[in-house]
Length: 303
Image 1 (tube, rainbow, N blue to C red):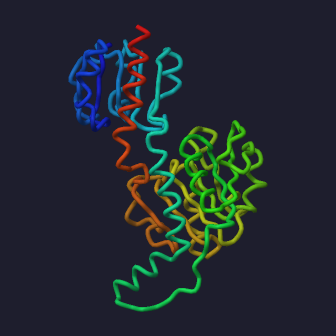
Image 2 (image 1 turned 45 degrees about the vertical axis):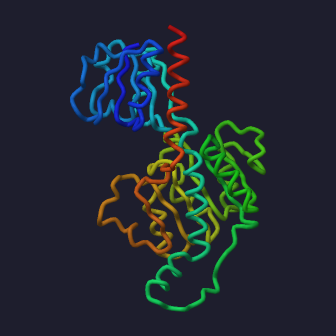
Image 3 (image 1 turned 90 degrees about the vertical axis):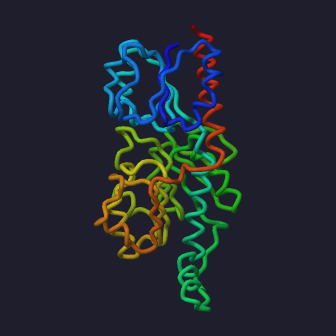
């Protein structure tokens, strides 16, 4: 297969010989926005992230396989992919562990008043805080029970939380105390102390957690979004943080990225805001290579 690999796969070059041994010819593009190193008609398979944001997918007339380095599919026209019979794979499971650890870490920072103690340390101030909270016994609702959501469920459950999953396709899963269909979300939110969003971005999930649903949460709930910014009405959440009806939030994704410098979210009380960084972990490279090589081995065997 004629394979175009981009720098989105950081460790790609270390595996070129292995890929060529499978019968692939390789062209490499470091920056996806740059000029292609080959004619798009030559390309039969790609390993990329946002390549088609800069190079229209319709130009790749012989494309039959796409391997994404991301867990999400939202940077690819899936309608075009389906209609042209192109096989597509994502990086399922690659980033789930660091994202789940990040979600738990964010809630713990809020519950344990990490900012208060950090500021005290910087000021050389010896001052206790009597308002620390425990994760034990808290009711955690995870919306989106795929790989990321399930890794989150395992970790929150290990802290003694009661974990409820909400998914389009509910199933039995030991990581959750219960898993309910999406139409039960409104019934679950009033009994939620920690809301974790790991649902993929689709037409159906845009503003899934809107102002009305945020208002269903009990006063003092914490919202964690590690999915996509457009899943959440962040302006409504921002208002809740300022008026104190939400205890805190952990946002790693935003509707507009980078987050504009004048956004009120930067200074919102009890908000941990990070620059779409939750997926980073020192095990990602090995996991990503494993997924890509396995998929390309399968595709090569189907020729």
